[in-house]
Length: 203
Image (cartoon, rainbow, N blue to C red; front, side, top):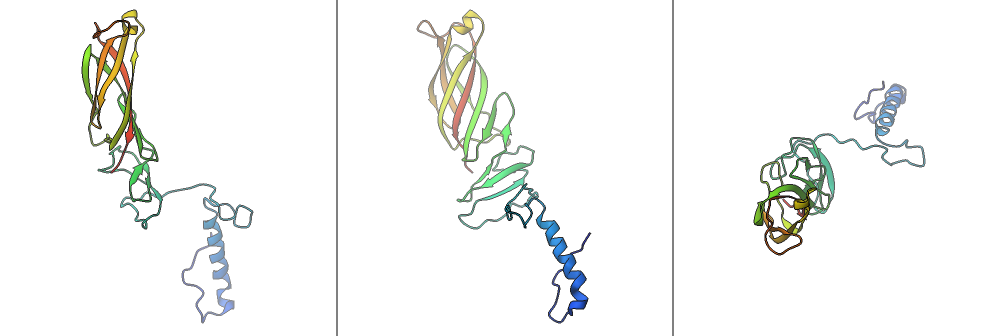
């Protein structure tokens, strides 16, 4: 295995003494370049074959307007997932943990453009109800919210006769009304409602 010798050769070094070390330096550079890169003497020279990232516990510093990528275990104000996540630093300096997600019945996921999706199921009572989105260090909050969509889950005739309507929504909760599908008025029994909420994540 060749060994790289830094700051060599020096101006006063004779070629007869530097030949071996220079050759080892070039061999080392060649080996290091080929890690995750295509061979430099091919048509694909300069291209990455694979991308390996070292963990950055302190968070790298990028120049203004640059876009960067690194991985770390997020800490507040990012959601504390307890896992190593790929973090995209956008041109305005905002950090987006693009692999972060909450794999639960009431879960969430963040996309690279800062869009966020939250979903879950509700044991809904008849009439008007309010659901507050789960809050925890491991759960991000909406910066803005664009909409909430509901669907009723049911197999029995009484369950299939239920309908859920959004009344109002905000970044922290939404209000909905569980009614009968075929007649006017509140439902006569409880139902299971599935929701999806769409908005943005911003820290």
